[in-house]
Length: 166
Length: 166
DNA sequence: TGGGAAAACATGGTATCGCATGGGAACAGA
DNA sequence: TCTGTTCCCATGCGATACCATGTTTTCCCA
Image (tube, rainbow over all chains, first blue to last red; front, top):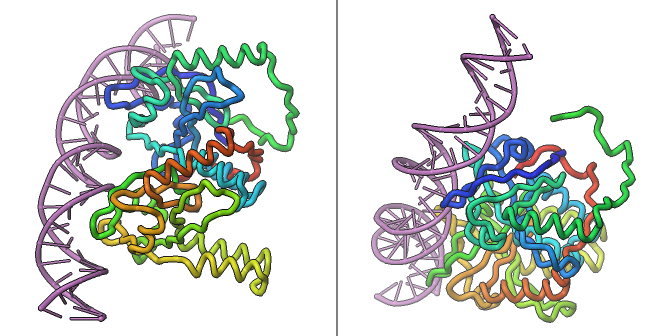
């Protein structure tokens, strides 16, 4: 299971190319190169302070989400409909080149206010891509909301695989 | 398992030909070329704002749906009857030419209000074909219904396969 | 522990290929 | 013969594969 960690600020060249952090690339690679999906954020009415960003994840995570929604709600449910439209329907497929870079389409750059550099922010099973400024904004908004307190979590031993992979 | 993603606006020429997005074609190809099925939408009484569109899917997905309905309800059930009549009975088989294009019959173009360009909207296991205007309409209707909130999903690790294949 | 070599990474530029799109010729049915 | 359909070829733009370079990190050996 992929685990995206930390934040990495990389340059965006004039063609919109960005290096995907090497540690992320490992989780996004399969037999036919590395690739992932970028989904533009929606303005969330519950979090009006959140700046726009891109949500990145691998195809494995995407499949898992589809299966989870299909199993939980059923494929003719309203939830499945809206989920697929807002997630799969908004997704942009990005493929790395031989050097581990992707090109961010202009529409995505515009959406996330990214000009000359982008932050890859690892959030476990997924990651965000945002401008350095919006990275600070979003983190500040979260700190303001939570007061720095993390929600409590019940970690069930059966779910975690044994062994510590890098 | 196929995964149709994103939206792709392609031109329809005066013969009714449209390029099927290359990323879709990969999921629709078998030994005898690429082909899929287009099913005109029905007006949904629960969603009166939804404009007409075409529902596209590969033959694998059709098989899976038939098996699911047959297994859930039985092939002499009312549900199986109506499902087959409204799904298989309304299906139009479309085959790509050597350049990856299909011809949309006039009846389908009329149904979906498609004139000079069509949007292929990937929704995971299937996709929609609609006019750019109706694409916007349907997305707006979904955003209005959900308020921009995606349904929450509990992704259980056991469901996700290891590896990220596209 | 420290220094040097080698690999990996981020970044820039260029060339080649594939895709979307147009038009026309061969073909079949009416 | 005429109409509508299927195949084949041409083309421009954009994507992507390839190459080159400097910098940083890692590794190995003294």
